[in-house]
Image (cartoon, rainbow, N blue to C red):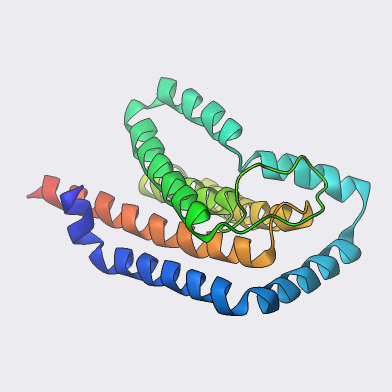
Length: 208
Protein backbone atom coordinates (compact mmCIF):
# COMPACT_ATOMS: atom_id res chain seq x y z
CA UNK A 1 0.00 0.00 0.00
CA UNK A 2 2.88 2.37 0.79
CA UNK A 3 4.36 1.74 -2.65
CA UNK A 4 0.93 2.25 -4.26
CA UNK A 5 0.63 5.66 -2.59
CA UNK A 6 4.18 6.59 -3.60
CA UNK A 7 3.63 5.69 -7.25
CA UNK A 8 0.23 7.38 -7.48
CA UNK A 9 0.53 10.31 -5.07
CA UNK A 10 -0.41 12.89 -7.71
CA UNK A 11 -3.46 10.88 -8.80
CA UNK A 12 -4.54 10.50 -5.18
CA UNK A 13 -4.16 14.25 -4.70
CA UNK A 14 -6.31 14.71 -7.81
CA UNK A 15 -9.02 12.51 -6.29
CA UNK A 16 -8.92 14.52 -3.06
CA UNK A 17 -9.19 17.78 -5.01
CA UNK A 18 -12.03 16.27 -7.03
CA UNK A 19 -13.83 15.34 -3.80
CA UNK A 20 -13.36 18.88 -2.47
CA UNK A 21 -14.78 20.23 -5.74
CA UNK A 22 -17.79 17.92 -5.42
CA UNK A 23 -18.43 19.15 -1.88
CA UNK A 24 -18.21 22.81 -2.91
CA UNK A 25 -20.54 22.21 -5.86
CA UNK A 26 -23.09 20.58 -3.57
CA UNK A 27 -22.90 23.46 -1.11
CA UNK A 28 -23.03 26.35 -3.56
CA UNK A 29 -24.42 25.04 -6.87
CA UNK A 30 -26.73 22.20 -5.83
CA UNK A 31 -29.92 23.68 -7.33
CA UNK A 32 -28.24 24.68 -10.60
CA UNK A 33 -26.73 21.23 -10.97
CA UNK A 34 -30.07 19.56 -10.29
CA UNK A 35 -31.75 21.71 -12.95
CA UNK A 36 -29.03 20.78 -15.45
CA UNK A 37 -29.29 17.06 -14.59
CA UNK A 38 -33.08 17.03 -14.80
CA UNK A 39 -33.01 18.77 -18.20
CA UNK A 40 -30.56 16.23 -19.66
CA UNK A 41 -32.44 13.30 -18.15
CA UNK A 42 -35.75 14.46 -19.66
CA UNK A 43 -34.16 14.99 -23.07
CA UNK A 44 -32.65 11.48 -23.05
CA UNK A 45 -35.76 9.64 -21.93
CA UNK A 46 -38.07 11.57 -24.26
CA UNK A 47 -35.78 10.84 -27.20
CA UNK A 48 -35.45 7.07 -26.78
CA UNK A 49 -38.15 6.05 -24.31
CA UNK A 50 -39.73 2.73 -25.34
CA UNK A 51 -40.09 -0.74 -23.85
CA UNK A 52 -37.46 -2.39 -26.06
CA UNK A 53 -34.79 0.17 -25.15
CA UNK A 54 -35.78 -0.11 -21.49
CA UNK A 55 -35.33 -3.90 -21.51
CA UNK A 56 -31.98 -3.61 -23.31
CA UNK A 57 -30.73 -1.06 -20.77
CA UNK A 58 -31.87 -3.29 -17.91
CA UNK A 59 -29.60 -6.04 -19.27
CA UNK A 60 -26.73 -3.60 -19.80
CA UNK A 61 -27.03 -2.15 -16.30
CA UNK A 62 -26.91 -5.71 -14.88
CA UNK A 63 -23.53 -6.14 -16.62
CA UNK A 64 -22.29 -3.29 -14.43
CA UNK A 65 -23.67 -4.67 -11.17
CA UNK A 66 -21.96 -6.31 -8.22
CA UNK A 67 -23.96 -9.49 -8.90
CA UNK A 68 -22.55 -9.84 -12.41
CA UNK A 69 -19.04 -9.00 -11.24
CA UNK A 70 -19.25 -11.82 -8.68
CA UNK A 71 -20.32 -14.27 -11.39
CA UNK A 72 -17.53 -13.05 -13.68
CA UNK A 73 -14.82 -13.19 -11.02
CA UNK A 74 -15.88 -16.61 -9.73
CA UNK A 75 -15.61 -17.88 -13.31
CA UNK A 76 -12.18 -16.27 -13.73
CA UNK A 77 -10.79 -17.80 -10.52
CA UNK A 78 -11.15 -21.27 -12.07
CA UNK A 79 -9.37 -20.14 -15.24
CA UNK A 80 -6.58 -17.90 -13.97
CA UNK A 81 -6.07 -17.20 -10.25
CA UNK A 82 -3.51 -14.47 -10.88
CA UNK A 83 -5.96 -12.61 -13.12
CA UNK A 84 -8.65 -13.05 -10.46
CA UNK A 85 -6.52 -11.24 -7.86
CA UNK A 86 -5.41 -8.59 -10.36
CA UNK A 87 -9.06 -7.76 -11.05
CA UNK A 88 -10.78 -8.35 -7.72
CA UNK A 89 -8.44 -6.36 -5.46
CA UNK A 90 -8.57 -3.15 -7.56
CA UNK A 91 -12.34 -3.61 -7.92
CA UNK A 92 -12.91 -3.88 -4.16
CA UNK A 93 -10.68 -0.84 -3.49
CA UNK A 94 -12.39 1.25 -6.18
CA UNK A 95 -15.88 0.24 -5.05
CA UNK A 96 -14.93 1.16 -1.47
CA UNK A 97 -13.64 4.55 -2.62
CA UNK A 98 -16.88 5.19 -4.51
CA UNK A 99 -18.90 4.14 -1.45
CA UNK A 100 -16.94 6.51 0.81
CA UNK A 101 -17.48 9.44 -1.56
CA UNK A 102 -21.20 8.62 -1.80
CA UNK A 103 -21.51 8.88 1.96
CA UNK A 104 -19.54 12.12 2.10
CA UNK A 105 -21.57 13.84 -0.63
CA UNK A 106 -24.87 12.17 0.38
CA UNK A 107 -26.80 13.12 -2.75
CA UNK A 108 -30.30 11.67 -3.06
CA UNK A 109 -31.22 9.71 -6.19
CA UNK A 110 -33.74 10.89 -8.81
CA UNK A 111 -37.35 10.76 -7.66
CA UNK A 112 -38.57 8.45 -10.45
CA UNK A 113 -36.94 5.36 -11.93
CA UNK A 114 -37.76 2.44 -14.24
CA UNK A 115 -36.20 -0.15 -11.92
CA UNK A 116 -36.03 -0.66 -8.17
CA UNK A 117 -34.17 2.32 -6.76
CA UNK A 118 -30.98 1.37 -4.83
CA UNK A 119 -30.96 2.31 -1.17
CA UNK A 120 -27.56 4.00 -1.16
CA UNK A 121 -26.69 7.54 -2.27
CA UNK A 122 -26.40 8.69 -5.86
CA UNK A 123 -23.09 10.50 -6.36
CA UNK A 124 -20.92 9.18 -7.95
CA UNK A 125 -22.35 6.27 -9.94
CA UNK A 126 -20.82 3.09 -8.57
CA UNK A 127 -21.87 1.11 -11.65
CA UNK A 128 -20.02 3.54 -13.89
CA UNK A 129 -16.95 3.84 -11.66
CA UNK A 130 -16.48 0.09 -11.29
CA UNK A 131 -17.24 -0.72 -14.94
CA UNK A 132 -14.51 1.69 -16.09
CA UNK A 133 -12.08 0.06 -13.66
CA UNK A 134 -12.96 -3.60 -14.21
CA UNK A 135 -13.56 -3.64 -17.95
CA UNK A 136 -10.67 -1.21 -18.43
CA UNK A 137 -8.35 -3.65 -16.64
CA UNK A 138 -9.66 -6.52 -18.75
CA UNK A 139 -8.83 -4.47 -21.87
CA UNK A 140 -5.36 -3.83 -20.44
CA UNK A 141 -4.64 -7.50 -19.74
CA UNK A 142 -6.13 -8.60 -23.07
CA UNK A 143 -3.81 -6.20 -24.90
CA UNK A 144 -0.85 -7.63 -22.98
CA UNK A 145 -1.75 -11.20 -23.96
CA UNK A 146 -0.88 -13.21 -27.08
CA UNK A 147 -4.43 -13.19 -28.43
CA UNK A 148 -4.93 -12.50 -32.14
CA UNK A 149 -4.77 -8.76 -32.96
CA UNK A 150 -8.21 -8.68 -34.60
CA UNK A 151 -9.77 -10.36 -31.57
CA UNK A 152 -8.09 -7.80 -29.31
CA UNK A 153 -9.54 -4.95 -31.37
CA UNK A 154 -13.02 -6.51 -31.28
CA UNK A 155 -12.85 -6.99 -27.48
CA UNK A 156 -11.54 -3.44 -26.97
CA UNK A 157 -14.39 -1.95 -28.99
CA UNK A 158 -17.03 -4.12 -27.30
CA UNK A 159 -15.87 -3.41 -23.75
CA UNK A 160 -15.41 0.32 -24.41
CA UNK A 161 -18.96 0.54 -25.77
CA UNK A 162 -20.20 -1.50 -22.81
CA UNK A 163 -18.61 0.93 -20.34
CA UNK A 164 -20.27 3.89 -22.07
CA UNK A 165 -23.64 2.14 -22.29
CA UNK A 166 -23.56 1.14 -18.62
CA UNK A 167 -23.21 4.80 -17.72
CA UNK A 168 -26.02 5.76 -20.10
CA UNK A 169 -28.25 3.01 -18.71
CA UNK A 170 -28.03 4.44 -15.20
CA UNK A 171 -29.37 7.80 -16.41
CA UNK A 172 -31.99 6.31 -18.72
CA UNK A 173 -33.34 3.99 -16.02
CA UNK A 174 -33.64 6.94 -13.66
CA UNK A 175 -31.35 5.76 -10.85
CA UNK A 176 -28.65 8.39 -11.46
CA UNK A 177 -28.26 11.94 -12.65
CA UNK A 178 -25.96 12.76 -15.57
CA UNK A 179 -23.40 14.38 -13.26
CA UNK A 180 -23.31 11.19 -11.13
CA UNK A 181 -22.30 9.21 -14.20
CA UNK A 182 -19.75 11.78 -15.38
CA UNK A 183 -18.15 11.72 -11.93
CA UNK A 184 -18.15 7.91 -12.11
CA UNK A 185 -16.31 8.00 -15.43
CA UNK A 186 -13.72 10.38 -13.96
CA UNK A 187 -13.20 8.45 -10.72
CA UNK A 188 -13.08 5.11 -12.55
CA UNK A 189 -10.52 6.42 -15.04
CA UNK A 190 -8.27 7.77 -12.29
CA UNK A 191 -8.45 4.43 -10.46
CA UNK A 192 -7.76 2.53 -13.68
CA UNK A 193 -4.67 4.62 -14.44
CA UNK A 194 -3.33 4.17 -10.90
CA UNK A 195 -3.64 0.39 -10.95
CA UNK A 196 -2.18 0.09 -14.44
CA UNK A 197 0.80 2.16 -13.25
CA UNK A 198 1.24 -0.31 -10.39
CA UNK A 199 1.09 -3.30 -12.72
CA UNK A 200 3.61 -1.68 -15.06
CA UNK A 201 5.94 -0.83 -12.18
CA UNK A 202 5.71 -4.38 -10.87
CA UNK A 203 6.68 -5.72 -14.30
CA UNK A 204 9.65 -3.34 -14.38
CA UNK A 205 10.83 -4.61 -11.00
CA UNK A 206 10.66 -8.24 -12.18
CA UNK A 207 12.87 -7.44 -15.16
CA UNK A 208 15.65 -6.07 -12.95
